[in-house]
Length: 229
Image (cartoon, rainbow, N blue to C red):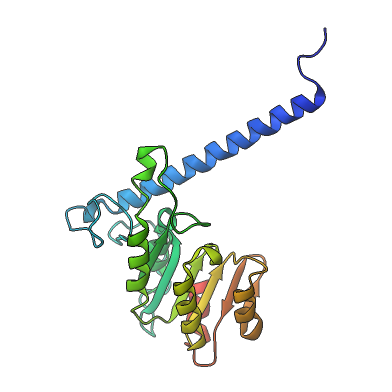
């Protein structure tokens, strides 16, 4: 009996099914991660949202009240708290809290929509679009975050080009003035980052996909390395 599909058609069908499965899995991971951020912020729901959004909107809100099992190996830290700006998607910012449980960290999160985009268009799914902060709120959050002084800027897998240009300039200016920069999974071939890491490299660990950079006036290397670890 002849086959319903040719080999080429069958291969294409399998590939499409595999891609659909990966997309479904990625979407499920995003939903679960967003739910974790939402749950971690439930205790804050009674308070007014810092950006005037719905009280259950997780954007811009993190709490350390929910504690997971951990070893507080550098909390307290004998040199005091490390002031850190954390740039990463909203749904991944629970990792910031996990880091703060283990390291004496005074953190300020600047949340994006995804690793590749700071702001995404409204989704067809209302349940998902609820978690997307308006562009003007994201911009305001960045402006407010950059009014503070930091020992280190941590970029958590965020595509560098997705950061608004004005804020990118300010971040690079901070690094030039001595602020540490810890980049998780930095993109390759970015001209701006190549200048920074090319002229002032600190350490590169290919196995961890981490790049660390600091300038002469930056904080001591011991503190910066402790954050990276």
